[in-house]
Image (cartoon, rainbow, N blue to C red; front, side, top):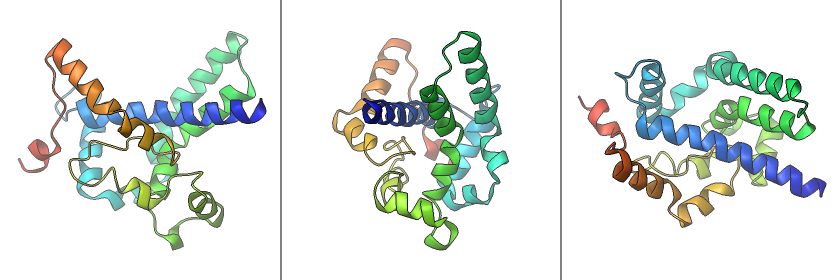
Length: 181
């Protein structure tokens, strides 16, 4: 049961961080209030992916830390704080760091992280490169190696975008529209 809970927690953290990544890439636009800066940073990241690794942990994760601490406080207040909530929160808080390691070369990546990437526990640069190829509209989950292929096989992200466009009339953002204007 421990292994099942562990895997479920890791997959859920990967999915939640991937879902937020997808929302940012697909729908955040630079001219939007509150999320405009996130959209600008994502567009810059797609234009120059390695610039992301120059940011400190704090610069790339402070917002995730604040949200994670808020989630922990709520779980504690509601008497639902468990090791699984803590693991989930730790993974989500560090999703951008894990993402940065997937953009780093071997010399820039700690030995333990290289080991975890080699054994497909954490996402490697090769696996993450699929997100940065073509239209950058696939492979949004950045923590593990195993969730993205499943979501792509069932056409999850494009299906979500299709539903959103049919229901709201809002289409996904085109990076080209902003990068070449």
